Length: 260
Image (tube, rainbow, N blue to C red; front, side):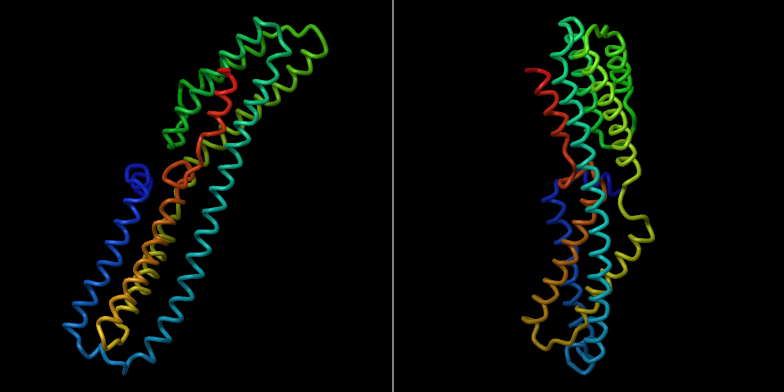
């Protein structure tokens, strides 16, 4: 569900929608509470409310910080793996000058085909292996096996390129597994996130404030913070989808070098 949301709704629109839904809904709830339960506009219950809000707010801030930090680490790992995948392809492209023109042209065409197929596979963001990319990877391996290295320079370049080929294959596997498995918090964590968010907003809604002009802004600010936190968690749930997703720029860099 979260994957569909971040892949089909622009980040700006998603943030605005969450703010309207949470902050706007909380302010409507305040209006109802103040009208139906006027006793809550007094400050008799504020001693309890202050303690409750302080305790819940601390737990909420600690928990959300832990979740965001963990998910940001996953995104950084995916970004580092993407750079490694692109860098390996760039090194393979630069080693082509050591081979004969026939071998270099064959490998260049195969490597370019693989990188373009990998970008298309990346854009899907689902972690499903693309048959086109599998075929391109097999063709690239065959292209290197056909090289007849006749001197030390070519042998060294071939050995280095085969190592980089293994690095590309491994980085692709890690990328696909990450896209498939890193899909955000499991449902127990989502339950706790929604529960603590509701408690934070609910506590400020029933906080005793006599003047509506002071109460509504306070509720709006808390609702805005909760909406922003939920937006951040949603965007970080999928390393290869959404506005904070890891980009395929390293692979595009490899394609650019191969085409020049």
